Image (cartoon, rainbow, N blue to C red; front, side, top):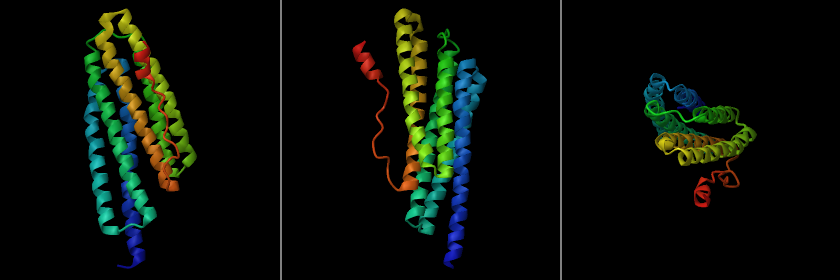
Length: 236
């Protein structure tokens, strides 16, 4: 097979895989927002749609992995193309995990509807989830545009998510100490906050993959987490 034809086939296959990545990203963005919205509205039906929708995200990851494996086996990509293929696989894995966290939030929504609401907490969680969704949108834009600076900005913004999580963690502790009847609800809400914080970590992972794709280098320094909740517990 002529080399030019092989290159065209490779490019076509890679375009198909990248289209799946963007579709997967769109579904995950929607899952983040819908899970947080269903929590705030105490809407079990909406939460169930998030849970059911996770299957489509999982299916896309399987397809992406199968197609990238086939590409590696049949096309013998050059160093630059190999880096792109490996990046796609890493991004799809991060997206799948974010989808799982959104599903976990939706699972807890049904339980929380049976418990008294904790004042203002679900609105704060929705704002935190919205920030993560915007980070994901920018991380995917950075991938498409090969924009290292935008990827670095996404990584830096994860500190804000960590700080939101810290604030919510302390808030839940206060509620539980002041009113033991709120302990069960606050524990569920804390797990939801932690799920959102972990979403931010996986978005950061996508941004780091963009930097690796464009520069061939990992980010120079390991980002210091702004989650100080373990210290808070010890000091409290």
